[in-house]
Length: 423
Image (cartoon, rainbow, N blue to C red; front, side):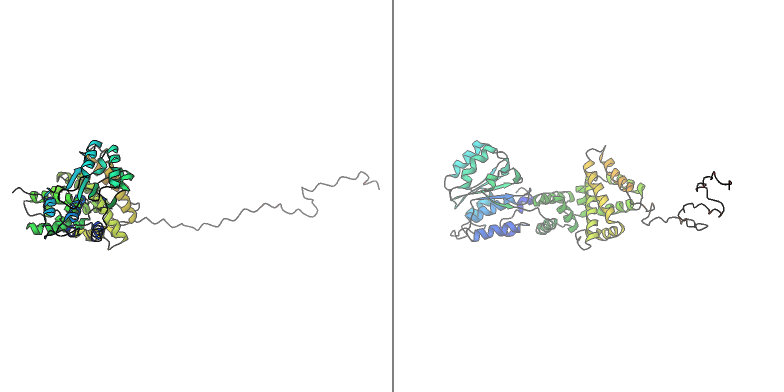
């Protein structure tokens, strides 16, 4: 038998096996238990979060007959009746999966709707699953509106899309919409650990954590990377080999580089940057990882106990958080984000990465001596030899008093009496 990839081999077959979508699972189970079934469902979310898987499980719930063949609609499909086994194996006649990317014309949609009018062949409900529904043409959407609003009682529509913004509001209003969340790295890593235990393959938890972060919210991407890691590591999945496979930097190297920038050791920082390239690590990925480190440092500064997933580097992150000011962390974070955006315009990735280092060095806080985080001591100013005398406000000049027998100059002399002396 040919090898089956992990993403297909370990695809969930019931609601209990779904990881990370508890809000959707709870709503669907309650609706099935109370028999409050909608005629059209819309699942939205990024790739690999479980849209197609939920569609198949829902189809099994609607058509399961139980092991004795007398069961009805249920939220716990048996997985053993003919309908459940046929849906899992992809051969159930009344469960039709359609890729809207390759069947997007109005003619193809019209043919599908015409076939939907016929009753199911050997099932309780005929289920149509239209994947990437946003790829349908405008005319195709218009053709399905009436049927989507009032389909036959034995027909259920399940639509799935990664871009709900492109789905017309007239279609959205006719569907019961569920938004599937991106997978948390911890949930992906835990699921990987469970799979590796059942497969009997040894794996380091730290290596699985790196793979789960590289999956970026997609369980399918995570399991594909796990397949690649098993092949690359020849069985034993180790942290060192996973980092080499993904081109991810060791967090200790990033912490060392941050300390070099803080202490002004420019030559050592540039030598480390050159060594990163020789090790085959992508500078773009290095900038991304360095920005993530700054993000964690900022969180530790504000909420010390909030970061718990840093592994062995947590102690060094706490040390850096104490050595840097919050303003310095924010500035370095912005420099790294700008470096990410400038990578495409830089002469090469090495130039873009080293320019980020040089910017951090150029914008170090003023008042710190090169090579240390201790503020420079300023030379004391020489004491003044003599105290300056206080300067009084200028006084208006007052003319001296004139003698009694002399009239002051500003007083006019009395005019001579012409008759004086004749007496």
